[in-house]
Image 1 (spheres, rainbow, N blue to C red):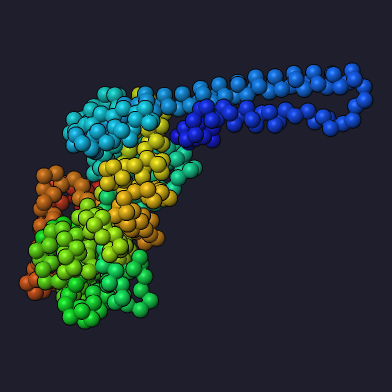
Image 2: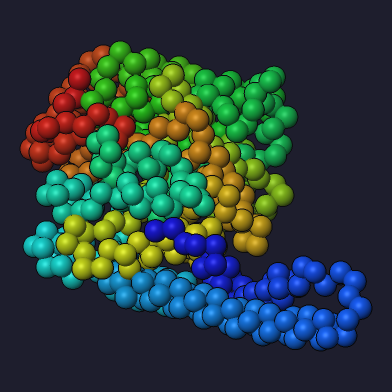
Length: 478
């Protein structure tokens, strides 16, 4: 839903200020055009003066009428949002919920913090009681499969009149279709790179830290090791390392996560990890869970990790560290966003009110506040982060560059595996360990671990998710 200029003006400046400006504008418009003409007849002067007084009085009346119309528009628009039944599956902890409600308060929006299972059941049952639902990407496929969601394409068109969404997140909301948008992107979290400024002296000649490739990263790490006499790049092998493999390495080299698991491109990627990248890592990487700690200690100068596991470094020493997007590979810049979306159930009793809520939550001002208070990053361009804590600003700029990069290739969290999500993580970890740590033959490892992956897909019935192409049944492992 787009807002008229008068609505945006009233919301930001206030009704009283708008009234004063409208009156001033009307006064200027009602100056009598022939006031400069020379008149010598006193009766004519008096008549002109009387006419001017009447015109001014009429202008005042028109200004008051215009202002009343603006008041009504503001009340109607705010009423739309306040009338919505909004259920959020995010920000459930008490402290987060309290912060979220404060963010919603200026929009007069109420929220119910729901649980995924009961909320899905309610929507699928066609209860017609929820206008808008906010949830992780993985919640929406089950609703889309049952045609329980409104196509949000028209809502996106309206919103795009005055804001620009990251195209990669819009594409994710299509759920593999061409034009059936399941949700409007709302917020995100992801993984980025961090580097000590001392490491920048070792960048390969001509390299742009904001536009690296994985081979350039390995070259950079090797240059640091050669210059400093010790490996000072690091990966969280004891932390979220499976996300590094699932969301970054496989997609960047193969264009997929599951479907291309044992492809020839995957073999090339494993060769690169074994021969080029892993040998440049600090040996203590096998013990690292959070990379902010070795960054702060100086043991590591260049690192990959989740934004929440790097923030202490940027907060404690913002002048020491830089943040930048993860590198790209032959198939694109694979990255794993944790996408939160806003959808309207097909049986929403008040879809206009739902659209007003989505409008509010995707404004630059509210996107910045969600980042500052709840640590979820914007999904639109141009959000002002200058008033945020410096560490958050540093991360936000890197996340924005990553999400909006021309070759961005979102690799979503696994969908449809139920309580067996840990199984897929172990398969990717085992493939890495067997090849890179234990030295087993690449083709054999990928074949055997690929068989396990296919069994997992078959037993859970999980269809493919981005970046893999959509599948009718269980995702095939090629």
